[in-house]
Picture 1 (tube, one colour):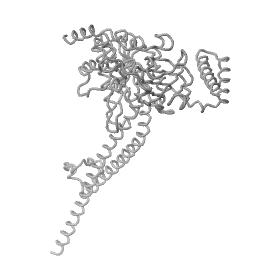
Picture 2 (cartoon, one colour; picture 1 turned 45 degrees about the horizontal axis):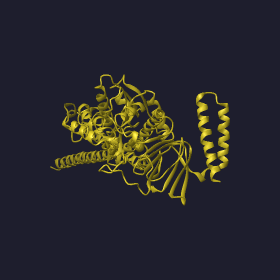
Picture 3 (cartoon, each protein chain N blue to C red; picture 1 turned 45 degrees about the vertical axis):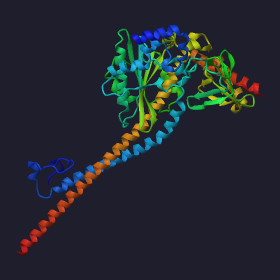
Picture 4 (cartoon, rainbow over the protein chains, first blue to last red; picture 1 turned 30 degrees about the horizontal axis):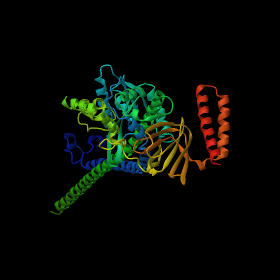
Length: 308
Length: 216
């Protein structure tokens, strides 16, 4: 009898029998049925996985949303005071794309990497400028390390894995970024709005000296009385705190967007698997019925030949 | 070009005008904002960014920087209440709530925030943050570990800290133990890191202790 290998795995619809298949012994249609059955089983288990992933993402989304809402306004006061100056002309810039560690979450990582590439391209226009990339998240690292092998300052992953993502973790990462002594840190992340909407956002944190230079050009910092250590030290503390709190908020928002995106991507995958399964089931039934019909007509034909 | 000239003339004849531009996007003088702000950045970014991208948003779009003066440039009237926010990384304890007075432990000494307080940025030290919902009658005492306080001209006050607890939730016995522990660590510290950790511990615990002594 013919082995399974003699047949192509049927795609959707009947495959034209090849020259080899035509010579195959009678009754081989049951083999193609078996191949369809195998395919059906695989699609239905994929569907189980995607729908389970979707449910998990939906559950995680609720907690992540609460956490990111609680931290929403953490960087706001410092940011309002020091201002948003993405175009500040500085000599050293660090770009921090915030990406996820796991896949199966739609296009949010690719999008963030594209924005990061845009920021880098713009900073490269400055002839005496130096731009480096520090990647948060494994998915961004695998996308960017080939593009910027010499610009990659470092990366971090599994930040929320042990004991959750805390302000302490964000502070550690920001300390690592501060070691580069950049004048401007630009964080690209997905800001979460609702389960169907997350918007790529660029947050700029200036170093204390860059902020001072900006303030000299007519900032409103002078309208405020500073209570604390001397001005330079205080601005430094403020800038460092701004970086840590901005990073924390961005990472939380991005992980919330990750769950939302994952939920949506997995919902689509589940629907596609369902659709494919329905088509395969139809194919399977039709082929089986055709085989039965053929056999029946052969029997009837044979019987009537005997009678005649 | 003409726009720049007009703005220059405007700035020359109305020197007070700049003071009213205080929202985050308008933080810088007209000239510099034109080159560094997100509005100027966006078209340049879209020129070089990979094609097919939607324009990004900027963090400054989500700020709520308060205006220092009214639209016509006159100073704002002194508000009745302080609009107070206390933000921790994991919780917004107060979110733009109206209170009568806030007492914050600045590193240069405690300071009270009443409506109409002069705009201030203060670094905080470990200590007691008093929130007077109604003055002297409805008072909540928090112990915070430090952070920053921002007081704006419109009576808005924001405090950001890493941790805060109700003062009455502190256990005097545990505070005493903690202080002793860090004091002994300070005396046996081997390197700079350990010494710094011990110093922070001693500072926080002695602030707790003195805060508790004041209330009892």
